[in-house]
Image 1 (cartoon, rainbow, N blue to C red):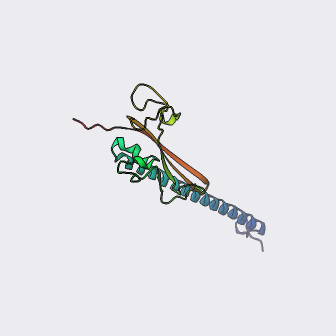
Image 2 (image 1 turned 135 degrees about the vertical axis):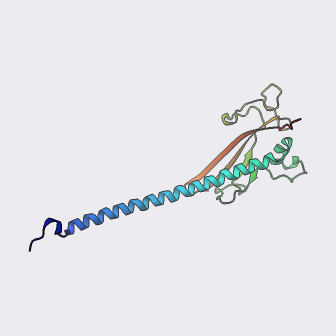
Image 3 (image 1 turned 90 degrees about the vertical axis):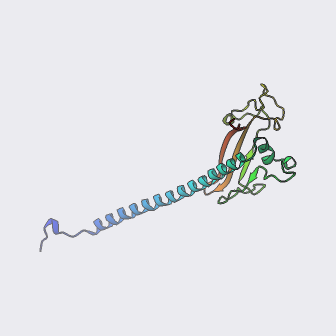
Length: 177
């Protein structure tokens, strides 16, 4: 009995070829799924870090301008409420793993350049921070009128060490008359 070409059954070779194509397609989909999961995790980590930096910046802005440096610098003896009353420059970031070897166990830190001669292009430094018309190497931390700062969040992510930096310039807010 002969079959018409439209009625012929598939050969074993055709079945094997179809199976190989299905396996390759499935492996490609699994690899794409794994990549998207990894990218999603990385994006989540970065979002947590950026949100923590923004929240810390808003916390800074809640203080009187002339107190910001004293509250968040490394010297706990100049805290406006008395020695050791300010939070200092380091802060925790919930949801991120601290880098191995981090000395304080906190992923976040605030950095102020206390000298006008610090070179940092992203902060527009060096610059006159106290309005005296000169850029000097003297400590101006007590008489600045513009306060540059960087907020770093450094963590150990799925793909190794990660870091974000939020930098800004703060100035004294004046109340409308």
